[in-house]
Amino acid sequence: MSKAIKKVTLSVLLTFFAAAAVVPILLMLVNSFKTGSELAKNAWGIPSFWTFSNYASLVSFNSGILVRTFLNSVFVSVVYTLLTLIVSSLAAFAFSKYSFKGKNVIFIFLLATMMIPVEITIPAIYLMFSKVHMLNTYSVQIFPGIANVFCLFMLKQYMDSLPNSLLEAARLDGAGDISIYQKVVLPLVSPAIGALAILTFLGKWNDYLWPSMLLTRTEVMPIMVVLPTLNTGNSQWSTPWELVMAGCVIVTLPLIIVFFIFQDQFMSSVTIGAVKE
Image (cartoon, rainbow, N blue to C red; front, side, top):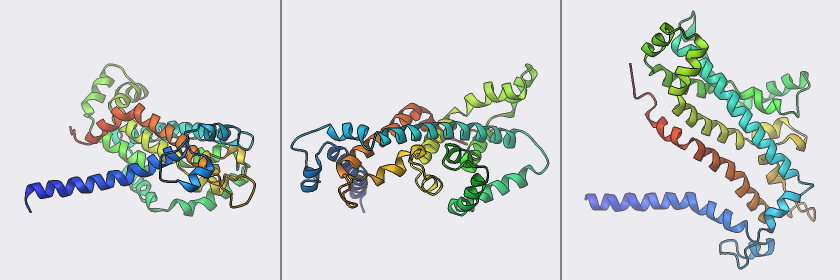
């Protein structure tokens, strides 16, 4: 097969996969500006009349519950991401740059926990938080997952590539462990932190299983749990798909914003582990 044929074949395949990823997003965006009746008749075409009424309806739908749950998702996702990165970076710093008895055994044990399906831990988490009367709170959505072994592993791998001479130089200048962590290590691992911030926020924002199993009060639920349950009230089957489309557009916006905020660090993270002492 000649190089030209290979190039054309590759271009066709990449175009196909790109279209498969982009077309559903475009349909979601276009359909969010249609009325319910037009969406039922013309789900694949351009709206004959572009309307923003769906977005306005979301604000007032069911006494504004979608606005409340959207803010819940923002709060939980931001706090969870911050706490996860703080805990993971501190643990990674300890495992990477300090020697203590049983370090390798503990690290291997932590890695082994990644093989345990999350679904198996839900009954235990439910019982534990039920005993302390913390179900149906923001805490049950945040604290169980902040000890993220994946983030710990990735940050440790990045910190392993940092020259120990930098830390020794900082100690000679009188810097303590906390100062070294804040002023030396964190700036150097910012690409990894930026990439993990995107992945962690994305995972928590799209989380459906965990809150749907542990929450019963709509007031503390994230929007990902409430959005699929939209109903006009006329019938148990009358899902307002035009509102669902508008809601999907809205819940996508924070993900895009987070990516643009951390895109430089995300692109820089491609070189994780490339520099060795």
